[in-house]
Image (cartoon, rainbow, N blue to C red; front, top):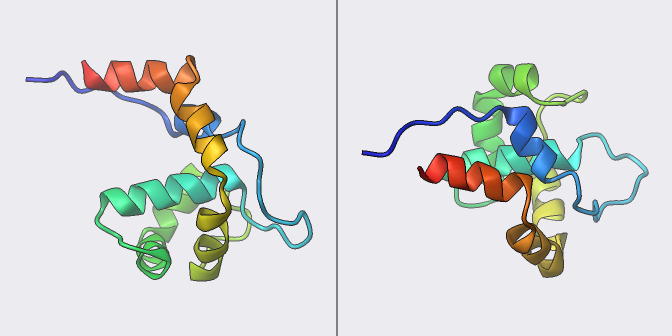
Length: 111
């Protein structure tokens, strides 16, 4: 049986710090790292798109605002609808192939 490994949210959000934010800097209310972590957590909870991600985030708002950098509360569906498709495949590949923190987390979790 695999041994459980504890990974902090700071470590996970730090993995996304290298991504370029595709949004305009005007009216940017939610940090990209927080948006991505919420999307991943919601998808793991079986959310299937921007609307269900936002609904899950609204249900978990108290937890998310305590754990993530969310100065404007949790993002709505329009944030997920705009951000997720605009992330460049090249950036995902850079994360996937980059040795370092994300790889170390994956190896620790996979033990």
